[in-house]
Length: 150
Ligand SMILES: Cc1cc2nc3c(=O)[nH]c(=O)nc-3n(C[C@H](O)[C@H](O)[C@H](O)COP(=O)(O)O)c2cc1C
Image (cartoon, rainbow, N blue to C red; front, side, top):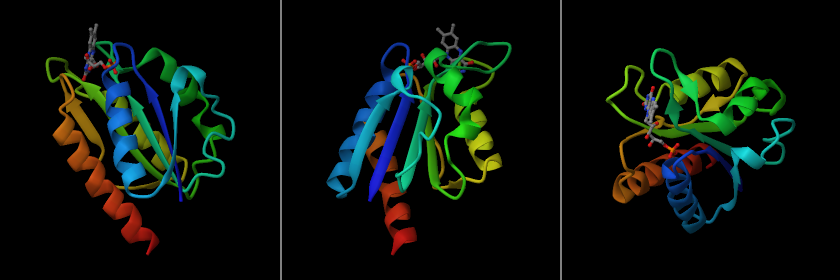
């Protein structure tokens, strides 16, 4: 089973979360690829993967802004081949802002619109990521993935 984790991160928080998720998925026996959104191309992004995990932090204040590197991916997400594929969304933010982790909601809605099968509840991290919180969430979403495949 092949999983792809794509993250957009400005100060490293969502990147750290992506690495922790990768750890859990590898322990679970998945073949995992991790890509920084800055180096990822939307076209055919999901091709060949059984599960795609998309992560972005949230910026802006008056309105929801995705992390800079994730914006081009989001704009061309219709070319990523998400239809019928398992997709899970995560990201970092802060409850100090009006739209807490608004990017996570925006990506999940868009993926759903494009026919993705949303797997698990999204992970919304408030402030500095907590390793145990992330590992527990990843284990639970991995169980759903494996359960759905069984
Ligand atoms: C100028 C600015 C605007 C922000 N806007 C939001 C926001 O609208 N919603 C939110 O949940 N977090 C917001 N944040 C918090 C960041 O998303 C948070 O610091 C996050 O951990 C950054 O993750 P990254 O290092 O992966 O980019 C904002 C932070 C700054 C400095």
